[in-house]
Figure 1 (cartoon, rainbow, N blue to C red):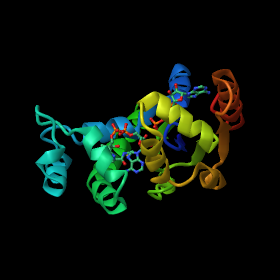
Figure 2: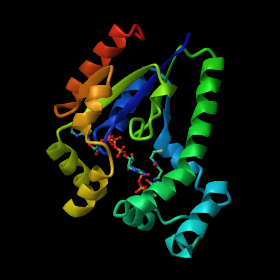
Figure 3: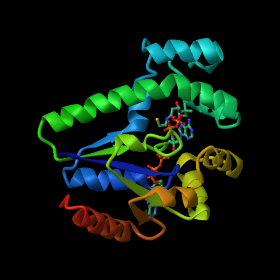
Figure 4: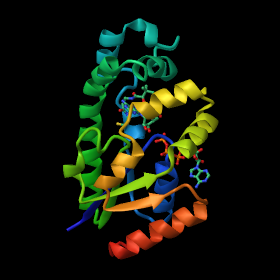
Amino acid sequence: MALTIGLTGGIASGKSTVAHMLRELRIPVIDADVIAREVVEIGEEAYGQIIETFGNGILQENGAIDRARLGAIVFHDEEKRKQLNAIVHPAVRKKMMAQKEAYIKSGEETVVLDIPLLLESKLTHLVDKIMVVYVDESVQLERLMKRNGFSREEAIARIRSQMPLSEKIAYADAVIDNNGTIEKTREQLLHILTTWSVL
Ligand SMILES: CC(C)(COP(=O)(O)OP(=O)(O)OC[C@H]1O[C@@H](n2cnc3c(N)ncnc32)[C@H](O)[C@@H]1O)[C@@H](O)C(=O)NCCC(=O)NCCS
Ligand SMILES: Nc1ncnc2c1ncn2[C@@H]1O[C@H](COP(=O)(O)OP(=O)(O)OP(=O)(O)O)[C@@H](O)[C@H]1O
C-alpha cells in the first residue's frame, strides 16, 4: 500500500521549502498551488466561471487572470473567497487525484500532496498522514511581507483567511518547526520520514 502524505501549513510557513527537500529525496510532491494556477488558465472551465462571477475587471490585457487583482478582492471578502474556492477547488482536487494515481501506478511508494488548505477544506480523508509546517505568526508575517512585497495589512489579511497555524498543529501526525534554520528543518523532516519508514 502506497503512503499518501498531506503536507500543509499556513501561507509562507515553509511548505515549498519542505517540498523542495522531499523532491531532492526523490519523493514526488503534487503542489495544489501549481495546479490551482493551471486550472484557471485561459480556456479552462474555471477561467470562464471566474469571469462570470468576478467580471472582466479581473483580467490582464492579454486575457489571463490578474492574480494580484483577484487576490486583493478575495482576501478582503470571505463571501467572494468562498465563491472562488467553489469554482477552483473541485478542479484542483480532480487533477491532484489523477496525478497521485499516476504516481502510484508507476510504482511510487510515497506521494506527497502539498495542500495549503488541507484542513480548512476538510480534505484529510485524502491522505494517510498529515505533516504541518509550523512557524510563529510573527515569523510568518515577516517572511510573507518580505517574499511577496506585501504591506503588513495585506499580509495579515492573507494570514487571517486561513486557520491559525496554532490550531492546525492539533490535526498533525507530525509537526516541523520552521522558525529556525533551513538545516534544522531538514533534520526534522528526515527524522519524521525515518519514523514513518519512508526512508
Ligand atoms: C486568489 C489568488 C488568485 C491569488 O493568487 P496569488 O498568485 O497571489 O497567490 P497563490 O495562488 O500563489 O497562493 C499563495 C498562498 O495563498 C494562500 N491562499 C490561496 N488561496 C487561498 C484561499 N482561497 N484561502 C486561503 N488562503 C489561500 C495559500 O497559502 C497559498 O499557498 C489565488 O490564490 C487563487 O486562485 N486562490 C483560490 C484557489 C486556492 O484556494 N488555492 C490554494 C490551494 S488549492
Ligand atoms: N527556515 C527558514 N529560514 C529563513 N527563511 C525561510 C525558512 N523557510 C522558509 N523561508 C522563506 O520564507 C518564505 C516562505 O517559505 P515557503 O515559500 O517555503 O512557504 P510556503 O508555505 O510554501 O508559502 P506559500 O504556501 O504561501 O507559497 C520564502 O521566502 C522562504 O525562502
